[in-house]
Length: 323
Image (cartoon, rainbow, N blue to C red; front, side, top):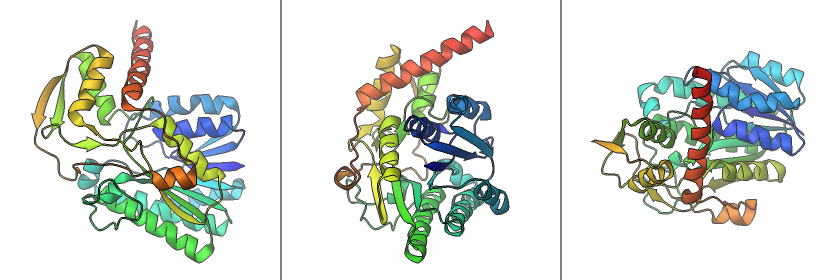
């Protein structure tokens, strides 16, 4: 197949692209390379895929319909995996209009182009943030999405509803995947595990919002990629699946895991809880296991050492380059 991956130079996207190439598919990556974080990091993420000859990179803003349509005119796309988005709860509170434009208009553009160019499969990267302040724990795909508490979460709810609309009207095979706190090698530098690891390694303090009791369902990136590829390769009509590890880890426990892997103690600066943050994310993955064949393998006590190992290797390379 020829598969279009939006956001394919990012953290999750680049791992997915590597797997798709390993599975003998041709990949077209659309990525804006915006300055949310250092674009050079994205270039490094995608370098192995581009070197393989099975991947083409197109630098394109998904909000620009005509620019995006040129991709579809040039390539006969069999499937779309739509991961491009403005991410993050806290930044979305500061710039809600930007999040609306990229996450809602950009998604609508891709759905419309899928319709126009008769793309048969569309996989949408959603988020556990859609559950917001749901009081049903663990979160299930059939929970009502009445309580998103950030613009980012609201845009992901909107994306899912748009996906369903295009399936209903045009019969596009549509799968929405709700990712739960993904981590692993290449993780964005602004995310907690990466930020904490760097700060502890460098002997700087880390910011702990609240008392450390908030809990997250941390999911290793290889498990996410397995779920995404399963969604691409199998026929569905319209489905929504949680992709998590189905276990919760408190912020305090997470910090302890990083300390253990680094062999260093954290200096903690405790701050007030942040608006838009939810107290817990916890995935019920029963449907994903039974229907999608999803099989998460990497627990937090395995995944954090793997991330720290990757982080330290990158630090060695950077130190050697400076010297």
